[in-house]
Length: 80
Picture 1 (cartoon, rainbow, N blue to C red):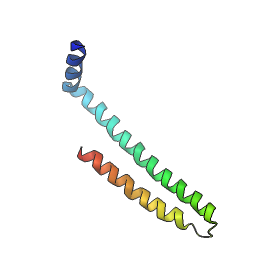
Picture 2 (tube, helix red, strand yellow):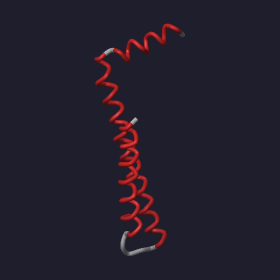
Picture 3 (tube, rainbow, N blue to C red):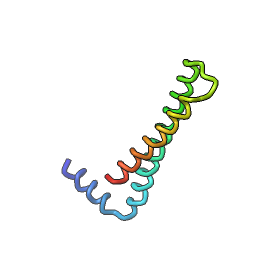
Picture 4 (cartoon, rainbow, N blue to C red):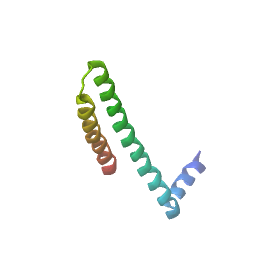
């Protein structure tokens, strides 16, 4: 147990792992943003089908809200 703690500290101090850790962190944020935008857009499409609108009102509104929500979560993660 104590040895694992030393290995973790050693890996965190290794500058070679910093680039890989940053890549994993930022690619995770990108996938999270994509998921939020896709889910809100899909929800808008489904609501437009349910309401039987000719114009995609819910799709437009929810996709814009999804972009803002994705940006908000990304900025929140960047600050941390």
